[in-house]
Length: 131
Image (cartoon, rainbow, N blue to C red):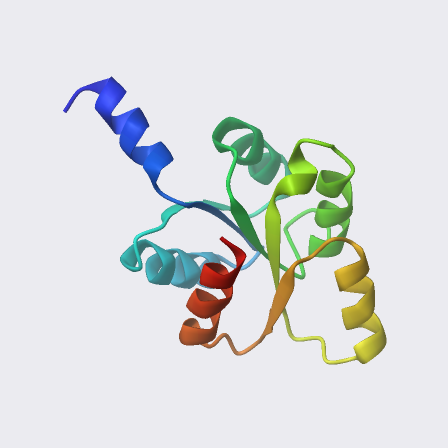
C-alpha cells in the first residue's frame, strides 16, 4: 500500500483523540471506537495530547478528569483558547455528578459528557450526534 493511499484513507475516517491518565481507560475506549470504524489516537499527558492534536487534527477528543500532568479541564481550557482548535468537539469522561461542576465543564466549550462507568453504546451515540 502506498504512503499516499494510507494518508488519504486516514483522513476519510472521523479522527478521535482519546486522552486519559489511566491506561486501561484509553485502551478500552480506543478498542470500542476502533471497532466502530473511527481512526483513534491515544495520549496520557498534556505534551503527548497536544502533539497528536496538532499533528492529526482530530474531529473529536474524549478526555478524562485527570492526565498524568494536569487536569482534563485545564487541558480543555488551554486547547479551547486557540481559534483553530476551538472547533474540535469534546466529550468529557467524568465521575462528577455535582450540577455546578457539570455546568462549569459545559461553559468551557465541552459539547457533551459521559458519566463513569462508561456505557459504550452511549459513547458511540454521543459521538455520532457530534459529527
